[in-house]
Image 1 (cartoon, one colour):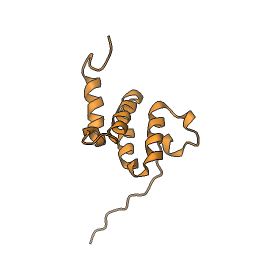
Image 2 (cartoon, rainbow, N blue to C red):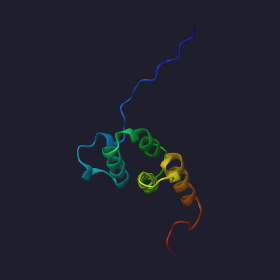
Image 3 (tube, rainbow, N blue to C red):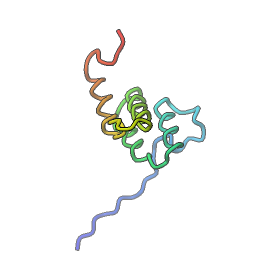
Length: 100
């Protein structure tokens, strides 16, 4: 029988998990910190957004969509993949989501 190598549990590298002061965090990390402080069970969803490869502004927008969905029944942004896709599609379309 062939055994699969075990994944080593690496500590998270996101500052919102390790910072002592929320004041030192970027806007995206601050939102992530606030979500996790209120609901520790949402760490996997927050991690998915934080590690999606988005820029800081898009990450903050996705986290805001996700956070706001937590209090709205049936909001599709409760799925972090949907929040990521929403900010990715609006930032990819020229002029969409931007004030002129």
